[in-house]
Amino acid sequence: MAQATKGKLNYRCPRCFMRDIDMDMFYDEKTKQYYCLRCAFRGTEDEVIGLNEQFKQKYGRLRQRVVDFGEDNEPPKFSEHKAGEQ
Ligand SMILES: [Zn+2]
Image (cartoon, rainbow, N blue to C red; front, side, top):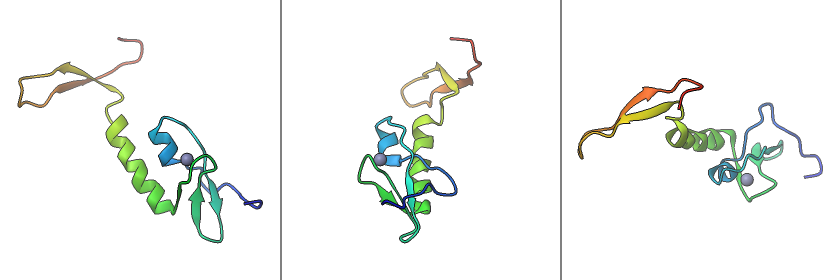
């Protein structure tokens, strides 16, 4: 750990981000894994990218607003949100 470096790309820790904590990870050249100093997460670049895909479900509609919830079995309708509007 003393030789810990950042990777080519800085990835945030997916486990910490799940709890809304923004934490950069370090890269271990020997094991080719990223690891987090705050929690016990450790994983390859592919695992990190895979977990990050899950956040697109959580934040994928960040720039959209529900305009109509519809009837029980209909999907809700969305519109794009413009900055400065409520
Ligand atoms: Zn973490």
